[in-house]
Length: 203
Figure 1 (cartoon, rainbow, N blue to C red):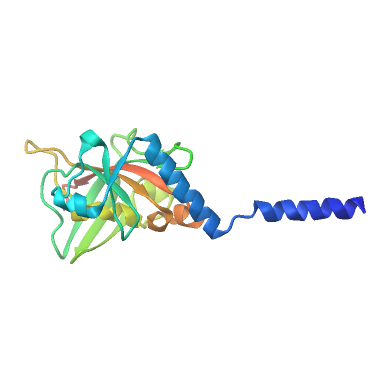
Figure 2: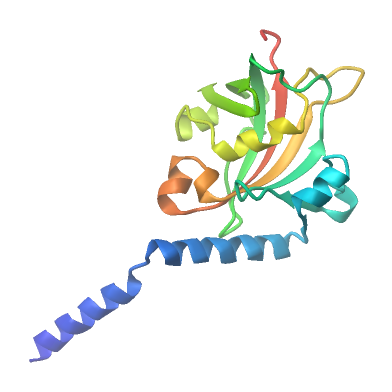
């Protein structure tokens, strides 16, 4: 009888430990809310963002919430150069910091690798962007697929070379699992990113 009771308790415990997808999404939402509060982020909607000229006020630590993707975006610098043109493909050098939103630990960064930026190719067709990593830390840690959330800023930033006219574009993003890499998607896990985009001399 004791064995049966112990087995039942184990079964009940394992059932209680099981997380449904709805549970995981709720945990993600709560984690993002906590992260926003911890960082003192002021969230604005897209209409306010557009009315302000598609910029975020850094003095107020503003991030715009993008309704279609669930991504929160802060534009630190629009950058020098020009936006990616329609039907154009460019090779970009990427510097990034990736932080786990749920426990605020740094998972990956290539800021400490001064001569080894990540490299990605990005193409624009109309308002649609596609991209893939060709080398670098994200490529080796995850896959060649660029997280969809990383493509959100391209409608609002320039991709150029650093020169006397200004510096390269820089953004911060909070990316939900639906817009993340394969690890984020499979684990229902959100990530925070700080990213710079620089056009390579080859494109």
